[in-house]
Length: 377
Image 1: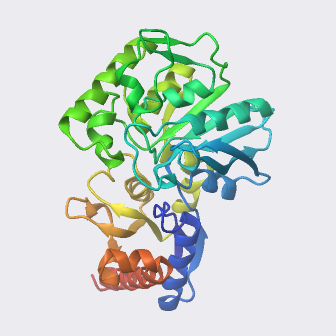
Image 2 (image 1 turned 90 degrees about the horizontal axis):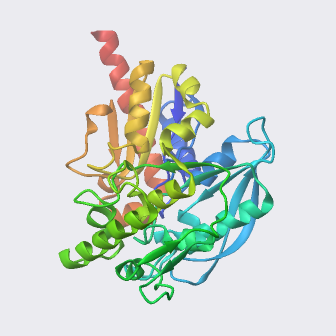
C-alpha cells in the first residue's frame, strides 16, 4: 500500500490548500485505489495560514471582526483563537495579513493609498480579548506602507514637518518627519510568519522587488517609496538591511519594532501540524502552489517540503497552477502543471478541482513507473 502525504499550499485566489489536497487525493485514487492518504494542508505565512492552524489545532475558534480593508472599505473577516497552553495560558491569536490588508481584497491596485490599518485593528481586537501570544502571517500584502497603518491602529502617530498626520499608505512615506510611539500598545509574545527574507530597502527591498506587484510601475516611483522606507527605518530605529524586514511592504520591519520575532512561515506551520512525522512514514509527499517559479525556492512551501522529503528519503512531487522555465524542478521526482494539463492558465483557474484531480492521477502513474524502474534496475 502506498502512503501519500498531501501538503500543498493554497493556490492563491483559486482553491484552498485543504481543497487542493482533497482533489489531488481523489485523482491519485483513480490510479492507485489502495493508497493511504494523510492530509496536511500547508501555508507559509500568506493566504491560508489561519486555515492551516484551524485544521491542525482542536478547539480553535474563529473570532469574527470588521476592519478597514486595504482600500479603507469595511471588511468582514476573522482571527483565530487557539486554546490555552502552558506557554500561552490566555490562548494564542492567529491573524493573517491577507484576510485584513491583503491584495486579494482590492478591486484594483492602489500602490499609493493601500495600507495595513486592518491588520493593526485585528491585532488590537486580539489584544482586547487578552491573548497571551500572537502568531501573525504576513504574506499577500496589498501595500508598501512600511507597516505604518498597522502601527497607527495600535496607537502610533506618524507626522509631517508641520505636525499633521501623514496620508495613509506609501503616499505618506514621502512626508513623514516624526514617529511618536509613546501611545503604542504593548505587545505580548509575537511570532511573525513570513515566506521572504528581503531587506526593507535597496535593490532587493520591499519597493524594488514587490512594489511592481502592487502597482508601483516606474523606476522613479520605486525610488521615491524606497527613500521613504529608508527614512521611516531611521525614525523607528530599525535596520533597513535586516533579513525579512521588507516582508509585506515593510510590515515585517514594523512588527520587529513592536517586539515581534520573524520566523520562516513554512517551518513554523510544519512544526505545528507534525509534518516531519507524517513524511517519515510516507512513500510520497505531494506539495504545490499556484505558481511555482524562480522565487519558490526562497522559503516557500514547495521547496521547504522537498527538503523535508529529501531528509526522510521520501519522494517529493509537485502539482502547481503553472511551472515557469526558471523554476527548479530538480527537487521533485515528478511534476504536474495545471496550465499544461488544461491547455491554458484561464482554463486551469476556472476548474482547479478538475485539473488537480488530473494532476493527482498523473503523479500516481509517475510514481508507479518510478517503482517499476527501481524493481527492474
